[in-house]
Image 1 (cartoon, rainbow, N blue to C red):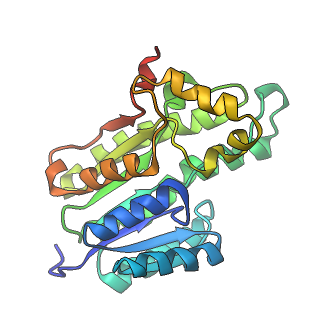
Image 2: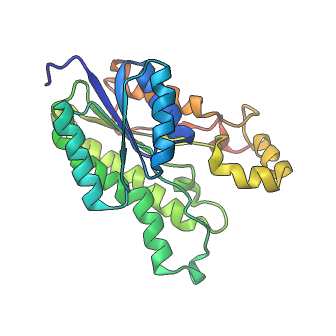
Length: 254
């Protein structure tokens, strides 16, 4: 265990949407937050916003699908601080839509890389530093699509997220002996730029999504950030290998 009082959280894909809200929340919880992204200009802007709120933060630009970039950057972060307390594997996305018959191998591999390889690369690189952390944990992101197999053209996205569900539990088994907890969150329909296109082009469709949610509203990034904050905290010290649905009851269907 590190004697450092500084708590360090690494959040991938944190230059916008849910990732940025998670970084902000962990910063308010007292963590030094290391944001990752591929848009360096956005990263610089986010750092300014966090610093205005009194949050200590850094930005590392690297592609989570690139094994060498992930490994070298996570190592740099871990060596700088002497430990990592929380790794939030937030980076991911739909990557586009394609039915299997027309799907190129390149598209298949790109979606799997973005959602599943990224979790493997970052987690593997962080483990030696998590071992030195205080109440260390990894938090991954799966999706309801991992259970429902996704909507039209989202089959490979769903497949990748089912993989995240499994690797979360597998990592939890693997790392329990070191006291490293591994959990996942499964956000439902969250009002972020992820849905910006449909919101702009078919607002009535976007608005209708709330009709399928038991609580009658779309989620906000803060709804996810609060759960990630809890999973990273001492209050969740006996929780591992779990996936928490954050969908307002959407997974049950109504």
